[in-house]
Image (cartoon, rainbow, N blue to C red; front, side, top):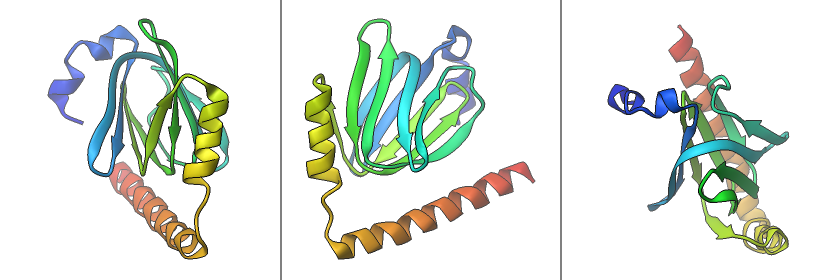
Length: 144
């Protein structure tokens, strides 16, 4: 990440900066995020500001984040990738929907994100393997 961004004061605030990206636009940019809960391929996991950096693949599900001003916010997300680097969390997903009613968001996930034809399922499976391999290699390269 840009060192200028790291020195912007957020690093010392003990809070995170969350950016949710879609293929063709920025879906959300939130500062002052105190916690994030996301659904990975192996189950749900949480992020706090001082957690170690990580990369995770996301499955279709509900991403929850909390800020002091908005409280708990729910976002239905399609599959993608989450990257935590310092206080910055970047989530890149195929699609996302904001909502306040958790049951409606769960229905949206099932209707919009989990209903795939067989060909699309095969394509996505191959893409996930490629993305995961690339992320692993980048992490290994960075640690060399």
